[in-house]
Amino acid sequence: MKRIVLIGNQICSDFCPVLTALLSEKAELWAPAKSVETSVDLLVGAREWVLKRQPEVAVFASGLLDTRKICFGENERLVPLTAYARNVRCILKIALEHSTAAPVWLTIPPVDVRRVQSEDEFGYDNETISLYNEEAKAVARMLGVKIIDLYGIVKAAARLDSNRPDGIRFDERGSDFIAGAIASRLGELCEKV
Image 1 (cartoon, rainbow, N blue to C red):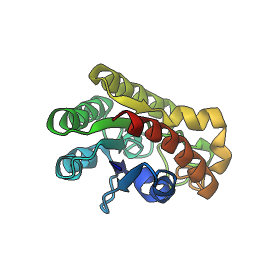
Image 2: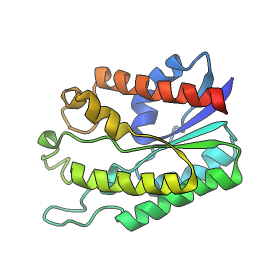
Image 3: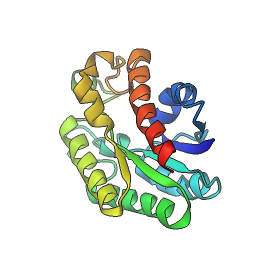
């Protein structure tokens, strides 16, 4: 039985129970109890979560909060794009150079911009998310790391109707669909590692 560590905000809270069930014959899944909000949090926790556990597969999913505008009327993001790319590179290098895990980068899913305009959820847009995803994918490709393109999966399935009212997190139907797509790719990877 393979061991998979799943590190990220949505993947841990929304997808992990479904992924656990879907992969129960192939893998044992673990996710940190601590919430991972940004690539900075992921970078800080990578040593503890991956190096100490030494899983066969380490799935990293971070970035949505990184792309958030700091305040109304400004275009500055919580984590600037260059810092995000550096964080992704460092996270993946920790896994590649100091563990036996096969790292996997999960891209940021799109948001439903019609629903993220409230004062509580401002500052997300798919153009910025796409830029951050392209940077992360370029880093992952350069390092030879597998990518699960969650952005592409969601866009191809036209699942914007499955977003929760906040426009960011998916409802149960959307989460189940996404977990199935992720489980399929992780199942294939488990057979190879």
